[in-house]
Length: 338
Image (cartoon, rainbow, N blue to C red; front, side, top):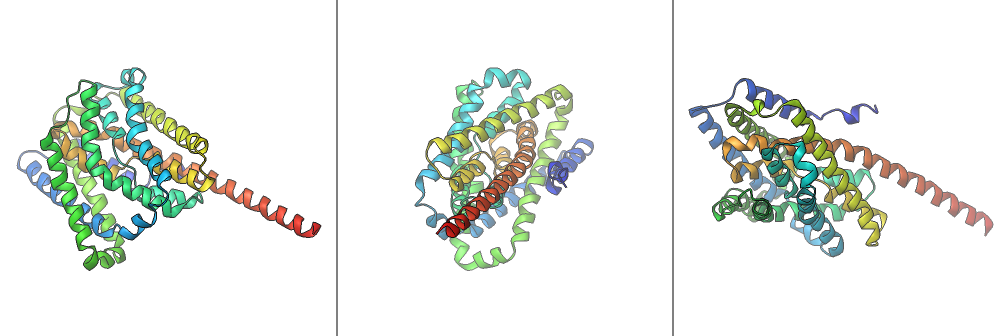
């Protein structure tokens, strides 16, 4: 059982299979155009369903813990970009310039929603705050990520994002999301009852983007530009970023005076990056032939964060069980003494 937690999940296996298929049978010409249209439709539907699913009551109810939410947002949208830029002398020699752009893009993305909440629950953290923090990060990321990506890339001479790209993000992602929020009163219950459908659209849209992106990248000679040492370098860079984020959120939350439950929420919501948001955004922000190289670090980071946080969540839970037993034992001793 201890080995299973280190194995890739089913969706990661689907991602790897999609990359293999795109490498062997890349779409081109009219086929690529059709897949592009399907991808845009799937992404719009995805964000519409997420808008219809996200409970405004859950977001509003958690807003009272503003210190926690600001800490999570600071980790997501300030700490990560700073790490990506400040560690450039260490990170850049390990990867190619194109992959480093992918690393910087990864650093600007919002947190995950489902896995952040799930790991917070397993670790016995503040679940209601996690729902609010992760949801707020995902929503704000639609607007913050393209602007932040432009600023980070421009600061490092990579060229910034145009206002046209920001407008496309708003049109393709935020407008469907807002439409879903407006329609929530009519279809929110139906969406909640059919969560597997949202999951299917979620994963299907990502697989479509990955297939079209890697098809274009393969036709541009992706694998000739990505030898095994460079791929290993990406893994090292991801490991460094994740380790820094986990350590800073853990000890930083303690220094700020948060209790254990809030610390757990900050660690799991503030150290993650969303594949579900990142892949559609990359599809809008970057040229088709560059997307494969851009999203590769994110795909690897996705699996790495799941494996590491699964282990960390179990350790938090085990520690909570030990502390609970100690507290119960102390209470019994006091009762006997009385």
